[in-house]
Picture 1 (tube, rainbow, N blue to C red):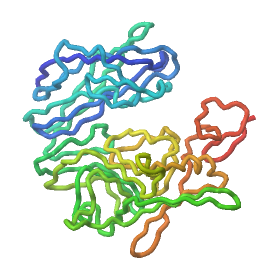
Picture 2: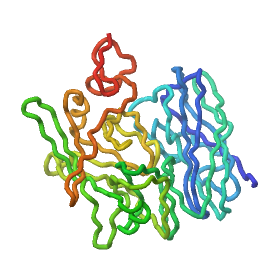
Picture 3: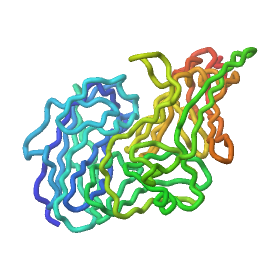
Length: 403
């Protein structure tokens, strides 16, 4: 295999507090592509552990094999005005102008930058690519980081990987698709996919006895004596439309299968709809132009999606509250509700969220959510406390006293 050119990457980093003792690490996600297609590769940076120095820029060189072209990268050209913020997925050359906070020591900045990649009529196979001469600069000087190697997997089958930060792209010619998505048998999971499926296809790829349900609505009640809040979240069995489609592209569902699944294999599929349609609750708040749903079911096509604090996600057949550090794999979804913060903060006192699936056989409760046991301390408002002083905190879902 012949290497044809070495290209320079440069990106300006604003206010990234990094460390000197533990070395920063750069990684690049593997890429799956077909011949004569277009995709991109994503560069990630895990920052150092203990130092308060600030990196101002990131530079690297990448050598591409024959048949692979990065249109945005011109030999000898660098992007000196690209500002990248933590956890932002950006295309090369775009400016990002908003961020909530600097990364904590050891934070992974997923999607530091993304580079368009054109794949010509190359042979099917695995192509290794290396980012070399990686340099990060600060006021204290320049640090050289280890090389980062990734693989471009070129296949006849379009592969969508739950561990990849590369989102699906349009596919207009009917082709075989493999979705690498693990689902445990006899447990409820969330799922969202970029293509429609008929009732027959759902049975074919997920198996007989698969249950598929759509988010419908939620309601809340307050106990008159205790004041405890209870939220009931309702799902209904998905029903095929007049054309026989049971599963819609970009719509999140909950699903229960009867056999363990590690991958989904489909033939003659197209991907024409790349948006994800968050599912709103039927119940709303406000009126007129201010009318808004009080609950949402939100899907993602990319791995390492951060689930917002106090949102709910499914794991091991249980709904858990995210502490704001949970990272979700691709082709999954999470829930946000207006009143969820009240339930989260008061869970130990008796507040509850109940999840139900309604169908022709009646109503089935899924699971009462649990606080994610991450060993961290949180104040009574649900905010993480890195160094707790004397007082009452929440740890692993229970109230604890620090003396």
